[in-house]
Image (cartoon, rainbow, N blue to C red; front, side, top):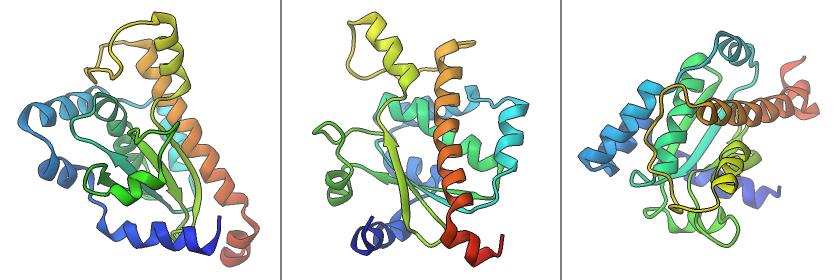
Length: 192
């Protein structure tokens, strides 16, 4: 990415909100309850926690989301669990409708889909983006081939797709962490 795009994201970063503040400002009571129910249902395996605790590079995670969005309420709590497992991850949320310029920059498939995540290094330089739904969720939806366009976001106990979505997101976080860990620029900076 160019220095211009790096500056674009760096300019937005200070405006992002932590999880709880994002919900306080943007969620109606029933939406807040749905997000909190998803957070309570989101658990990581010991192996996933160990992997996250092994991260060595700081990552800034920008999440374009909507408190009203079922996909966001089911996926964004995953990012909070990751951040709880390691001090190397800092997550900030941006309401899609409050940040139209950011939403336009992060369009996926011609739409302002949420959640969309931008992975930044410790200096705010972007290294990746990922969003909307994960592969496991799209496989489930393709298998159903009908129904609502946006999930309700309601967690299901022992839902194998929910566990697969957590792993899909962890894979993407790990991919970006390894990119940062192996970056010649960052290796030179940190002497490792």
